[in-house]
Length: 227
View 1 (cartoon, rainbow, N blue to C red):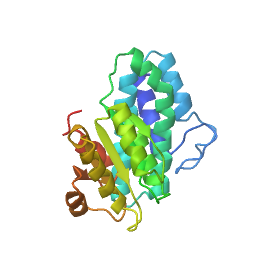
View 2: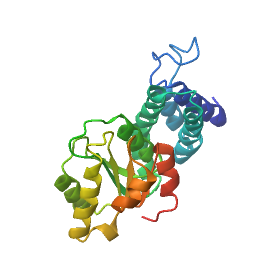
View 3: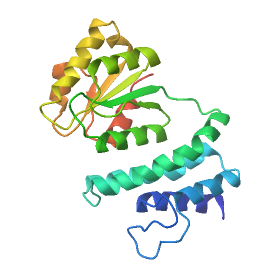
View 4: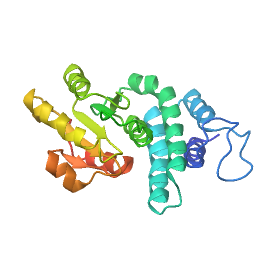
């Protein structure tokens, strides 16, 4: 299979949300055909540059997924399926990217704040950040403020992403930022927040660097932030 054809097939299957050959897609008749894992492994075996696979296969496809999501052609489960494809591909590609000298764009700690168990949105963002070249440290959900602060300090992270899906828990984001300030860490880390009840106004109120409505906006905002 030609290089360009292989990259296009990887992208097509990301859009279809097909991680493995037995997975169905949105289109009929795809079950049993090579999916993202098989195609990425074939691309590596053929000696394709892993950076090309990320940029031309995965990133380009997720840009299209983002447009579909904005038009409401895709719902969150559809976007999650595509993000899982990117995650599976990145698991295969990571060691090859290191060998190819593709440096990290910076350490990015991500967490859902204390009292909040919602993870789907955070997980999509984490996967997309990995695909975008960031070293992601995912602390999970319902993470105490002190644990987040310690992680920022321990990893000397350039970026921190905070998620909340409840109006009762979103105030925890402000507590994290207050504690970062008290510990002398606030100036060393860019703080991005997201989640249904949050907004640009709320980000400004608590002193976050920016609010992101989804993973695509997070990646876009990060382009203007130096690690």
